[in-house]
Length: 296
Length: 303
Image (cartoon, rainbow over all chains, first blue to last red; front, top):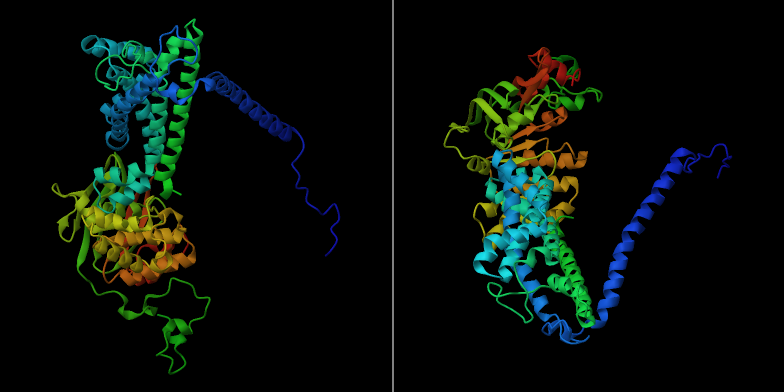
């Protein structure tokens, strides 16, 4: 090998000076922001697990809700879990298909026509409506006429989910490259066929994860259920009639209770709700991966 | 022509002219040096365009295009960027309908039928006139499902029949040997050249009458380009091909006829409108261009 003197060697180190300072400062700031974001999340998890874990048992998950004055360890949250699952499921069945169809209309069919612009605008406005207003709205148009029921709560949750599903699906549909649509059109496909066989499959991963986010959000809502489902202490499997209950409602009532037994029950319910949201998120990942297997 | 000095040695007439020519002689070659049987036999007209202008909204993108495209020929559209060749191509299977505000004036007929007639369905048009795009656009589906897509939307669901169509189309597109063991893999996992051949296979699977190709090899390396050019020549006895290309060598290599488009600049309104300048058998267009703009373009002095 020929010797290379120090002068001949190129200096490949990061240049000193303002640029390096800027780079390092920004990197440090980003790490700091990340830690700041993690802190509240960690505290929430630690507190909820610390205070709720001791309450969790099979009988806790299945037993009826006891009176507020019961001692610690008596009764459970079975009716609230069943109520949350059935109300959220009914809300999902109503909001997700409608929301996806709405997004398909906005992106694939509406184009620039005034109706589509109007619907898009209204969906955005609806996103901003406070959830308690949704509850009041369903209270006046449904609950006052048909009484308290899980279905009333599901209607309120569906109103809340609808704009989220529309907006997230719409954004995903917009990302589907036009070249895929053209490829399908060039084979003689109709617009409906292009949408169903090319656009939706290409977007399904994002649509599913957006919808599951909306579901997780709805499962944790309290305000829309306050006036619409009432309160129940035993499991009500009929979502269409009779008062029902849900985990967030139970947490809301028990958190302000002076009794130790009720408070412990509330913490257990909080942990269960977090666990349900977590399971939904994992499901979202798995479903997305399943649908996205051809996109990479 | 300049044959006399080349043929000064007696007995060399039987050898192809190109073999005796010095290596540095570049294209365009004089018309007489091409194999004589190459064009000039006029077949059935497939497309006939008369005074066609194409608008996007109020903007006139292409003006005054008149040409006839013949069956079982490869017709090349060449010209500088913005000259409207792709726009004209997309008019031939009504893909421009998908662009909001696009409309066509003048007569466009396909096998004697007006393409823009009132009762004409763009879907029916595109089932007969397929298209391969500049950028390979395989669907996010398996290789098999990509090719079977067209037959399926035409109502073929029989597994055996689909298998047969998929194999035949992939063979025609010279892709079968490379993918036959991974038909269930994603079409997005293929290389650029393979993906483009997959798109060609997908187009051939519906057995179109015409295949439109919009710069099918512009994103590909020379080997993949060569494969696609060979493929075009192989399938042209069964299909009619119209190809847009930026590559003049490609036009001379594959096409029977060439249409040269150019841009008309209006300095007052600063608008650029594409138009057809010259349309002729490929050897004549490159060997003996009639228009000065064509001459400048094909000899490389412009564009």
